[in-house]
Every structure is written in C-alpha cells, then in structure tokens.
Length: 219
Image 1 (cartoon, one colour):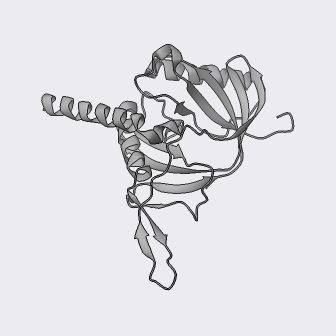
Image 2: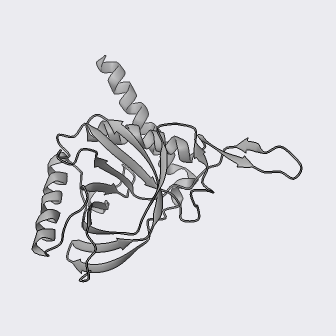
Image 3: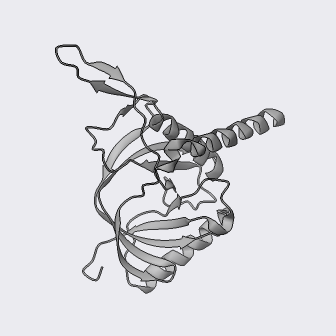
C-alpha cells in the first residue's frame, strides 16, 4: 500500500510538471483588478467580473489541491465539448483547449474550519477573459462547474515561501487583524492563491490570501 501511494504521488508530480511545461502554460493571464489601497504586504483590490471553473475535492490541502488541479486541467486541455455550427449541416461536437491562467485558488468549503482542519475544498481556475459563459466549451466531467463571479472587493496579503499549514494560518490571521484595524467588514472565507509551478524556488513564489470584504465609500 505504501508503494502504491508513493507511485501515485510521483504520477501526480510528473503530470503537474508536464502540464506546466506545456506551451499553454506560457499564457499567464491573471484576473483583472483595480488596486484601491496598499499598505506594505496588504492590499485592497476590486476585481472585475470573471468566469471560473471550479470543483469540489476532499482530503487535506495537498490531496485536495492535486485532485482539483487534475480535474480542472483535464477540462482546459480538452475534456470538454463545444458545438460547431456548419452551414447547411448538422452541428458537430468538438473539444477545445483553453489557455492556462494564474493563480490556482483553493478555499475550505466550511467557513468555521481552518486550513488545518478542513477536509472539503473548492478549487478554481479563472477562465481567460475573451470567453463568456455562452462561448466557453462545456466540461465533460460533471464535477467541473462554470460560473460567473460579480465585481467584488478583496483584502489581500501577499507573501513568498512555502505554503505549510502553519504559514497559511498565520498569514490568514495577519490579514484578519489588518482588516479589523482598518474597520473593514469581512464577508467571505479565506482563499489561498498560488501563482507558480511547484519547482519555483520558495523565495520567488507568489502566494496570496484573499478574503472578500464589504464595499464601502472609503474603498
């Protein structure tokens, strides 16, 4: 059983490396936002409406991240369908590749659970901005869901290094403390956003914790 588990772990690592080394990984569009305020590592951002693909995954953070990533990667690399209308012919169904974007975002589904305690997660990719819900290919995997997010404000903390459970929970608390000191109101759960492939040296990694906040005049 231990050998089988190790083999599966190696398979997951190789899959992720092959995916991120592919030409599509060179497309690194990130969600569009307006920077409203910056205070050192802390920011207030207003994100434009965007479309995401999301899945629900179970297990600890690493297990769920890997499971969710594989499902979403399958969708953008062709496990999908799109109807192609041809003149005077019956529409045909084809698959289509979708450019990889950054970051990959994960959040616990139950708000009362920390990143250490959670065992059910939402993993998401933002879709490239040229798509609408009507023009995006539809996933073949029923666990992959597409939805449009409205304009929304977030409090954000940015940091580098490894994403251990202790580090993540510490950065979440720092962000919550900063938001409280700014007299802002949290209206969402913490989300972990990771921008880099796994071989990136920790010092060069871009990690962020985002929490949705209520929009106010002072923002």
